[in-house]
Length: 299
Ligand code: TMP
Ligand code: MG
Image (cartoon, rainbow, N blue to C red; front, top):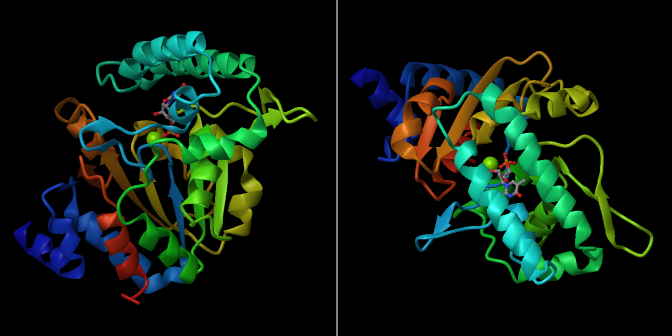
């Protein structure tokens, strides 16, 4: 065990950071070796957005999700803010409750998303104010995001951001951060605006945290285009994120990196069982970035 750890730590020293947990370091080493040998032109990255690419906390304060960016904004009446907060207080504890199964949580998550979207639609939100709202928000990408996006762009590695958040908001966050490069593609919930630019509905099939598999299978065209990239790096923060790569064709290797942000002790074992690398209360992209450097031959 120690020998494996030593070799792995030589390959990627950041894997010995105290926030890194691995169920099976040998598997991590084998997968990384195999992906590196195949070359970075066989790699694709699939990442969740909220609390994976964005920070969970900053200075002890919770950072907003895409939904929270809107919920806390001047576009929402104070009465509606109260209702959205109530939904958050009811359903977020369920989202992170390790004593309930995914099957049990699923209908409750659909309920949360449906009720929240209904409330947002009632607010007649104007499309041209979204940029201002994002600018005025406390949204923060994780430390090291610049390298992550730039490196993937420079090595023409496709990045799919797969989010149960709000596509229009998410795109604005990465646009304002200057990292919405052409290799980035987004699957998310997009808003439908009428001809005067007022929010009337959400488009297409709802993506919530436990149906990413269905979302992936609806987008076969994207994965067909990327069929020459059977090596996947997956980044998530929820157990629902584990199915984001289910549409990948002829997959050869997958390395799953999970950010464990909240309720660490209760959830540690389930994260270790399902993610290859678990990052415990790590607000940075240090480990994913080190893995990307390794996969691109440290160039
Ligand atoms: P994702 O990170 O898996 O894409 O999921 C989006 C997150 O958004 C999930 O952690 C729950 C959160 N959320 C809110 O903060 N407010 C809401 O109103 C809803 C529906 C979700
Ligand atoms: Mg998330």
